Image (cartoon, rainbow, N blue to C red; front, side, top):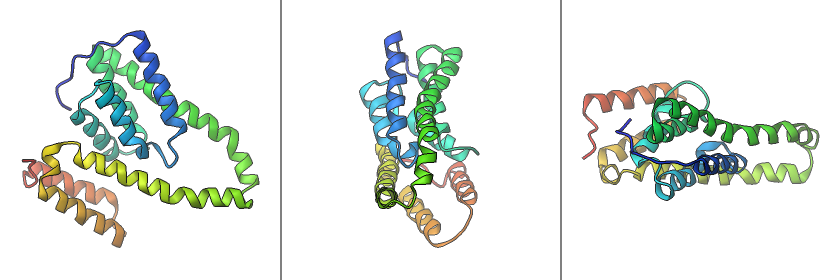
Length: 197
């Protein structure tokens, strides 16, 4: 990660962070990745608790690691807490953000899953499921765009865009395991072949 910011946070800021992750949780239809632009706006642009580099690194590292997509929330929390006070604060903030992201959505799923399953043949339930597909895809594209253009230098670096387009085509046309694509990207970056200008 990059060098941390020096952030001063009061108890009200921690509470506001928790509340915002509650809101993100209940509005993340399609998973938390679809909310990356909104989370970035809140944490980086509005509150300035993270840098764009810390935000992007948190998402990329979490996606490269095995486990659920939501792990990036813990890394965002870790970075916020580390910027605000160090190691202990980083752990506490990671837990706070994860609780904020998981508690509302898990509770909602627990309460509604049985009803949705029992009523899965209703036209309204089927229409809702079909209608959400294009919305989730559009939100994922917006998230990818925000990550790709977050660093203005990287946004102008054509080799990175070429790798992005090639990877997109490979994913769309083949059944190659994404692990190999991530490994290839990491090797290209480590070799210096993909250097951000």
